Amino acid sequence: MDRIAESLKNKRFVFWEEIARDGAQAKTILTGKQRAEIARDHGSLFNNNGPDHLVFAAGFTSIGKEEVDAIKMQADQVDNCYLAVNCRSSKSEISQSLDAIKKAKYARIAYVLPASERLCQLMLHKTQKEVLKQGIEIAKYAVDKAGGIPVDVQLAASFDADPVFVAESAAALKNEGIAIAHLGDTRGRLYPKPLANYLKVMIKNSDEDQLYGLHFHNDLGFALMNNSEGIKQGIYLAATSWLGLAERNGLARTELLSFHLSYQAEQMIENIGIDGKNLFLSEPKLHMLSPITNKVSNYTGVPLKVTDPIVGTGVNSISTGTPFVDTASFQPFDTEKVLGIKKKVLVTQLASIRVIKEVSINMGYDLNETQIQKILSYVKSNAYKINRSIVPKNELKEIFKKALNDEV
Image: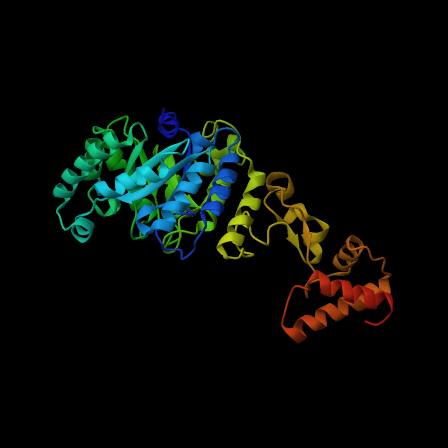
């Protein structure tokens, strides 16, 4: 049984995770071991229902031998989510992809087929109709060769093609055993309103049992909004990536969409227009979002920023007076309770007496008011002198020691 297809039929949400398979666009690389570790962690986020809610794109075999080895390592080490291999629409690549992933407990492949006239000419030097004919032959071959492993198709540049043609193409491919037709956005220029109209026309002309997935680039910052529109129109699979690291300017952030589709599910219809009560078989573990993104950041070398929503360095961090007194008035929810991110008090040029006092106590120093005031004056003055905001803990330790000896 294809548990991903069953989820989509039952209007449950599925993430197609692309942190490891970014089309060489994000300029990051992960070893097979690192990919396997992230995939297992991600699958665990859904408790025992990883295979119902997650497809982890394991790699792209045409990159080379080392990439194939990384895919095979994941197949050996990951058993709590689907692993997918992406490939081009050639029989040799389909065979190679199936061979690489065949040992996975939950395996699938997805081959790319251009949908727009422009991309059909660019990639295969054929017309749309000729490409569809070839795609159908490839579907027959892939499904027969797969031996029960689900086969998907990724219709590249779908949104530059006529929506009726895309619907008809998806139906023709489904008739040959293709499980899911993924709609690929190659240009990243989709605005929400035209997208909504496109999907309405396509769905109106689609078979009732047609399963779709969405792959939106984030060049204009609309990937999250466009995926939300897709859900509202009954498409429950979205390609996302941790920290958005994929393609040119990325995909929708996995951690952000995970949060929005899980937090306060009973209020989701009122807040974002999506019925969130049955999207997941069990409540996702939002406390895992921060540890996973920290791991991804560490492995890829892409640092977390203060502006990263849900998981960034600014979440539940305090450096000044009023928020320090009443944290709840300055954040959207209890971040420690919801996300498991504990409060961090940082000493900067914005520090107050309260901030210095709490930090010094937490570090084991008992300072009097005069010493605290001297430290505060020094911290503010030195920040501007060296043009740096945050005072590292090791420096604070030395400052507190000097204060005790009246050396500040």
